[in-house]
Image 1 (tube, rainbow, N blue to C red):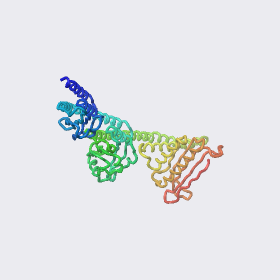
Image 2 (image 1 turned 30 degrees about the vertical axis):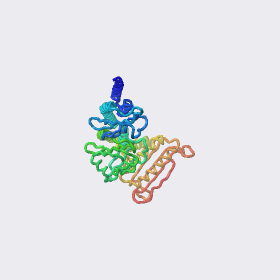
Image 3 (image 1 turned 120 degrees about the vertical axis):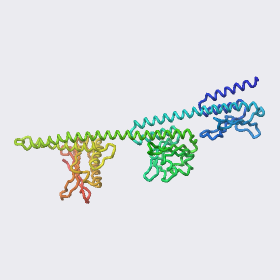
Image 4 (image 1 turned 90 degrees about the vertical axis):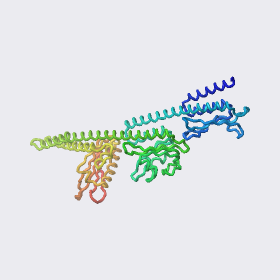
Amino acid sequence: MTARAPRLTRLLEVVLEAGTDRGLRGVLQRIVDGAAELTGARCAALALTGPDVEGLAGIRTPGPGPAPEAAPRLRVPVHVHDAEFGELRLTGRPGAGPFTTEDEQLLRVLATQAGISIGNARLHETARQRERWIEGAAAVTTALLTEEGADDALTTVAERARLLAGASAGVILHPTAEGGMEIVTASTPDDPDGIVGATIAPGSPVLEQLLGGEPVFIADSATDPRMTTHVRHRFGPSMMLPLQAGGRLIGTLALPRRRGGPPYTDVERLLATQFASQAALALVLADARRGRERLAVYEDRDRIARDLHDLVVQRLFATGLMLESTQRRPGARDVGDILGRAVDELRSTVQEVRTAIFALQQPPADPPTGLRGRVLRETASAAARLGVAPSTHFRGAVDTRVPDRVADRLLTVLRRALTDASARAGVSRVEVVVDTPARSPQGREGVRLTVFDDGEKDGGGREGRGTTVCWWAPLGPGAAGARTGERR
């Protein structure tokens, strides 16, 4: 009785220690170590034999390896919720003889408690996993509804999913016009070369499942014949989850692990699928929010443009007519020059306001369209180099009359002229004028570009200030434009 009491006491301690460990691997190690200690076995091991042990490896004591076949052995099965999980195996009892019936009874008690502790640890681990994925989905939703830009949104989804899944990479694929899918975003701490741009060919069985809204789970990307991307050899187990919301397929979230990595468990697959659904909904909401914000900006810009046209331009135009009529009155000769300059300034102001109205009517997120918008983009980008914003004027229907090939040459000349102006000292004023139809001395219709700056020329002095660059090209078939430079 006294010999059994210490063993029973130690058995109780092992059971309690195993029950307080929340980590599954910690529980398994305590069970194995306790089995060796209680029976005096030379080596103890837990061989995992059940169907629900994905991602786990066998546990053994850190002592010497297995003894010869003739050594005493003892085996007891371990069940978790009536399902086979593994087998406790004891080998060797140096100097103590074979295992006894009491050893077997102790081991069976330990195996029973092991099943309970393993079940509890699994429940805790599953709950913790679920909590992490839920927190991750909430963080992604918050980030998507506060960040700007579709690319940033996709990167956020890929990065967060990769961390949650313990994957080697997190990638987003978009459907292509040819019927395949292409990787457009990749988050990976490993070698990223060649991942973005990799494609799944049209007709792939994997693709058919994804386009149908079904997730795809792959045991080994490198050897699975369904995988066709040229980067598949880098990865092992993988999940490919459709990003689908409201019956609309946005893309696919792929989470491959490195080759030789543990396979995804059923719980991980379920949680990742739920995360993908939540992320897809967040992407749709974020896109809708950005659309509403863009619409509000467009409406505001359109209102400002209307106000400028209806109020400012009309008043300036009316003031110009008043000055012109005053200039024609008897006795206005003494102030004729002043009135003439005032009229010219008003005309110039009207032209600049109209240019601003056109710029406001351009969608802010889109590249400029037409020659007018492209010229405005060039002058705006040159303002920082020049130290002054160029004054830009357009005369005539430059967007509809100037063909693209002529517009391209005009922009090249404009870019060069602005660069040259930025290299001159003392530039305080730059004027750009695009005029069409501008006739050549021979009477041909064309487009003329004039760029003036008041910077210093070589040699200095007032006579050395001011440069005008003129360029003209025919609107129809003909020679390329001519470029001349002159001083004022």
